[in-house]
Image (spheres, rainbow, N blue to C red):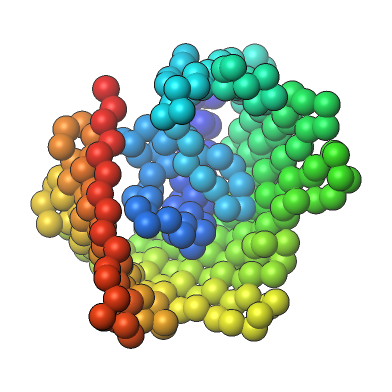
Length: 266
């Protein structure tokens, strides 16, 4: 019974994650839709603006030669997971996180192991069609909230739509993703973002298409004339080679940005 409930929860949580993550992702190398719960080994944090985290492991080296260590305790109680992480030798990096999942919701709470820690809370409540989530962070040193976001998403077999209020209520983001051809992973999407502080709006449209089962192409263009293209190829299971580029179509004389990455996973 617990296993079936977990599968049911993972389905709607992943849908919520896909919608809200598409609208919140601003990095040059965009996350693949459905990264949470996909073959990339991501773990979906329940939140209004979810992120994909590396799967818990014993330890892995970082570029700075520090040692990032994670210890996970599954099911100390039904639906509960405990995670302890720290970066050696940074003694102030320790963090404890508790996650609880239910058929129609999930919460995650974390606290840093310092004298004046930052306390974070994330929660999602909903079903396979509609989900409502929030992110809150509180700095005990200053007594101020450093983050509070909220999000609402709707999804079915062909589309995902979401409405987010981010940046402490300063930015309103609406996004829509429509599946065109599941066989070729072809989708189209649009995002409208409005900042209340500077009264500016940004409209972005995007699409993706699988050239073959191992190669995915994405492109997007916003109302300021910035165009981006990404090509991702799966070299081997769980390993990807990605090349991306960005150009300002209103200033072609300026040099374009080009980058690539190689992600290898055993």
